[in-house]
Length: 400
Length: 224
Image 1 (tube, rainbow over the protein chains, first blue to last red):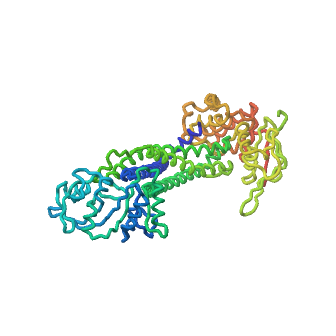
Image 2 (image 1 turned 90 degrees about the vertical axis):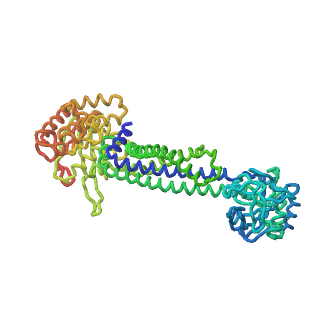
């Protein structure tokens, strides 16, 4: 205990130096913990944003880029699935529902002099209720064509069901507004206009060139079987389509955001290493200027391991004090950063609602940051402490 | 143990390897110090006095030859065993006092006791020993930097005595003190010797050396 007491006194004697080292550790721990919390919050948020379509398979034209996800801009190259292949998919995926999707864009006049380009999605009328939910109005029927408007688009241009919009040069009635769907991996209609497939074909003159085919498999257990069937049917001779289900996509996203988290933690780690180097430096100075004192202590009967302990206590005290302060700050800081990040990412949407920033993982990051801070401090203190213990008493006492 | 000499040097040499060549600090020294002796080691600077004292104090090991402390050979002892030997059986008194600046006078005296297994009684023992050094009680809580040289040396002697060692090793104990204070310190040492402590003292001051019963002269690492 006397050595602990000693360590405390020495840290107090050089309190400015000790305070600076502690600040270094505090910053390091804050960096590592709050960046970890932030990464975690992004993960949670993304998980929240992605519409859970666990029973969905998406088939897209094969691109040379391989395993991209549906939202990858490279899949927007001029590739399509012809109607012939859609029929083959229907046969292979039977009895599950197969939904071919037409996607294009056109200039849209929203009335009141406002116009702009918007994404236009063509779906068979009987498929629309399967895939999309309404916020208001009605689904278009086969004998009564009409458009459905994505919720953000509707908000932005103040469109309600019953309004009239002009797509290209054709006027159309809005029958309903779609419910917020978020970032789904099949189609993202929040900023788009959904029209019946027949109307789409007339309007764009498209020759049944589908941008993707969505297969709704009722039972998740059958997903692999359906994927294999489609794969056998269409990709036997050469790769013509890519087949992805939502699990693959979620795995890809998880990987991406895991990497973001690792990257953020890496930045935090670097600042902690800088702090550790500072502690190493402080401990080294402390050992060097106390060589004589160490020699005296050794001469009156202090053992090597006790000298080692004395200096390790000092490093540990710096680390623990710094980490506790840092942990407290990062709990607060991480929360503020995360709330800010959530606000930025979800501006104008409802996804940020009911979103908890602090979960077990976030607390875990704080604890991890603190343990890492204490660990690096002790590790940084070890070499100077060991060096101090190795001093020969007479040589140490001769030192000025 | 009673008829063993406290210190026995058997053909001891100490050679320091320096970049400019080997320096022979002690050259085949053989000597014994019996219990209760008061020995003064004298000689010009660089003659090997301090090396002799360091070897007696187990702070250094000989290049060749054998050293026995209380009949036990030290060159094969591990660092921990040597440290324990210093702690329990040898007290050091230095010219520079060498108190630990972080600790108060009393804590400096208490420190060697705390290192032993008898720490429960450390405070009382420290007070008792420090009182016997004629140091005013209000100075007990002062840091070494707040004490005069003579006061510091009294604290240092108390520290050297607190674990009741058989052997006191003094390296120019009055070298940094004025004559009057030096005399007081030497009187304290003589008192301890009278109570049976073996004392080996390095000095180049003939008046200080008069306190000793036996004089060893050393020149160029050899006894003369």
